[in-house]
Length: 388
Image 1: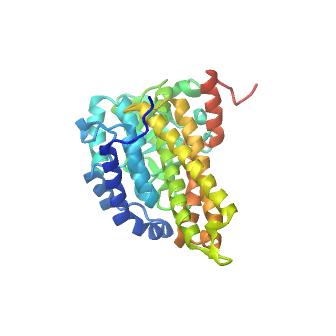
Image 2: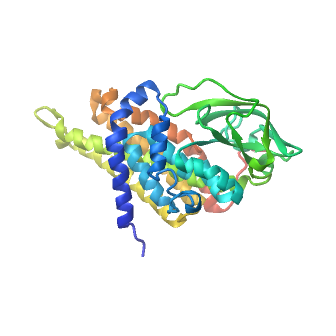
């Protein structure tokens, strides 16, 4: 029997996250988005003190040791009110920290995880390059072993957290083998000599979430910072399935928030002498929003419940991400339409959510790439996108 109900503990966790977000973060989102404000350090520490940055990380290092679904419940509640604050919870519970959790040595976990869980430091992931986005295995940033250090050279692009995070899990080419076989992951400290950052990007959405290019010029990193060695690309992308569910949940939060705002608005707004919810075209649009949000949530919860504390099935994660990303774009667009002119005004929130929805669809593998992965995983075969 498939059970979709949450436990009392999970409901209490959701309520705690919602209360925090309502009291602290919801009142600040318009200002933070307008000014491009990064999450203040004191707020990051607050999240750490409340245990929200280590929900799905091991208890041995200060985490909660809970299942992935528990973390996603918190991500959704905070992200519905403030995506900037939720981004930190998303990164800590479903991002590069999970690579450390799954594949790091005991000494690496003991060194790297406690400050992340406490909110004293952040760890960002750096994968994309100017010529390696969807084709991630085309990356050229290299790490060459020299005595007891790796020397990194190259450039990374679209690093969320770039220039702001204290640590970076950098995907690099460790050997001469082409494609995925030569790729691994290594942690680089922000203050390492030779590492520099480009200016902060001003994007369509994701205001308040740092993003900058990274430049590696003979950056020397201790060999003990290597988390996944040459040929471990499959391991890195196994952990990336966790991130995909985190991404899906950030998109789900946009859809649910837009639905909540719109459901209230169409019952209050009057035109032609009656509330606009009484018009069948409005009812049909709202019904579409409800169906799409609920479908995305069920796919995410199913994948997360089956994963427990581990990584979800890659097929389930890709289906959930593709569905949630496209849902968030469609539902936020419908929300803008049903709000009329007010939907185009920042004070009504939905235009910001529509901007952010497009960002989540591009990050972590676009819907187009997810469709390729879905077919590949479903059929159990790979496809060479480079052609003959």
